[in-house]
Length: 363
Image (cartoon, rainbow, N blue to C red; front, side, top):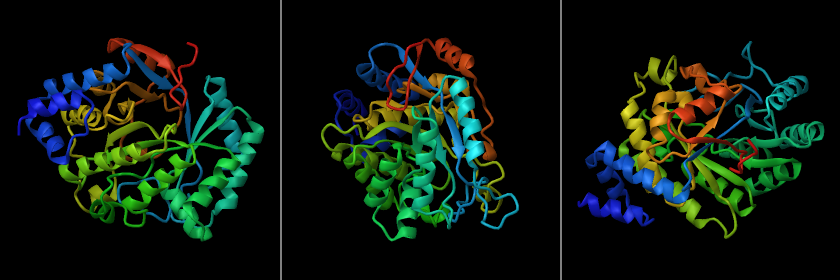
C-alpha cells in the first residue's frame, strides 16, 4: 500500500479504511505520523492553544454488578466497604470544587442492582437545586442500559428523564474496546458494543453533548482498535445536523496493577509510551470528524502527554481533583492547576481553561 498517498488523503479530511489505518500505523515511522496528525490538528485549531478544565470525579457508588476484570474499584452489594455517596458528601465535595474555580462534576459509579431511575432523578434534581450553576457530566452508556433494563424502559426514555432532571452531558464511559469478542473477555456483564453505540446515537438525537473513549493495551488486536475508531466515527457522521455529538475522544492504556486481568489471566499493560503517542496520532488521522482529542496524562505521565500535543492532541483534560477508578489500578500521576498550565506551556502551547462544551473561559 502506498502510505504516502493514504496520508495525503487523510490531510484532505477523507475517511480512511481499516486496512489503510492498520498500514499507516505499522509502516509509517512515528515522527512522520506525528507530523501529519499535528497538521490536521492545527487545521482545526490554528492557534497553538491547549485546553484544560477544572472538574471533579465523584463516584455515586462503588457497588457494581459488572465485575469487569480490569477494575479494582467495584464492590459487591454486601461487601463491608460498599458505599453510596451521601448528600452531605456531595455538597462538601462540590463546595471544594467551586472554591477552586470549577463548576462541573463527573458523576459515575457502579451499576448498582438496587438503584433505579428514581434514585438518579432525585440525585440530579437535588444537586441542581443546591448548586444551580453546576454542570452534570454523568453516567455513561453502560449505566443507561442498566437503568433501562431495571425499569423495563427504553434508553431514550431514561435519557429524556435524566435530561429533565438536570443531566448536561454524557461521558463516553464503558467503551473499552467496541468489539464484542473483547467485551466478553474483559467485561462480560456490561452492555454490548452495539448497545453502547446506540445509546450515543440516541443521546445525539436528544441534543446531549457526549464524549468517546477507548481503553486499549489488553486483549484486543490492532484490527479491533481500528474497528473501534471507525465505529465511533460512523456514529459521529450520523449525528443530526446542528448536534455536537462526540465533542472529544479520550484514549488511554489499560492500567493493570492488582487487576484480575493481570493477576489471574496474566494480561499486563502492553502499551509503550511510544505506542501511546502513535495511537494519539492515528486517532487524529482516523477521526477527521472529531474536533478534540485528549492526551491522558493521568495514565501515561506528563512528559508523554506533552509529546502527544505534537501528535494530534489539543486537550490536556482535567486537573482531576478526585479520581478513584484508574488510580486503584496504578495511575498515580497528579497535577494541580498551576502545574497543569505549566506543563502545557513547557510543551510550547498556550493553556486555555475550558468547560465541558469546550468553550474557553476567561483566564
